[in-house]
Image (cartoon, rainbow, N blue to C red; front, top):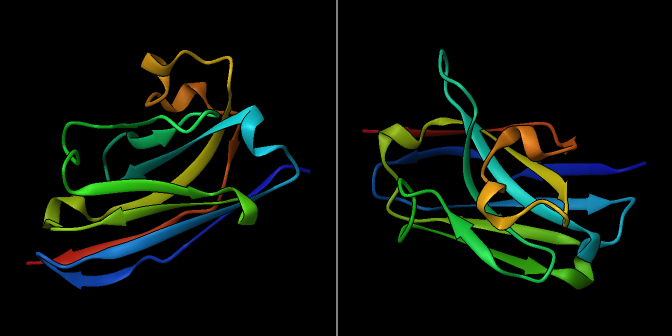
Length: 126
């Protein structure tokens, strides 16, 4: 079974940092792209960042320059380093897996993803 386990959320003050982790199992890492998404109350789920099967990373404009995604393939884990956090970053964050056949320009769309982990809450206080 494909499983994704997200962790690392918490409460942080504005300007602070958090690192989220997503550990995957049940599939070959290079067969899937991994994305991070977030959903705030009352809003739609939105793409934050993703890493393709060959390691290319993509970011939403709202987080570019502040968030960094990385992978440890030996651990089947991807990370989202979030720096300079803002109150508007407050949301439940999810990781998800999409087939590598999905074109990179579509990788921030939640509908492209087949497998989802449980969310982890990130709260940024002002």
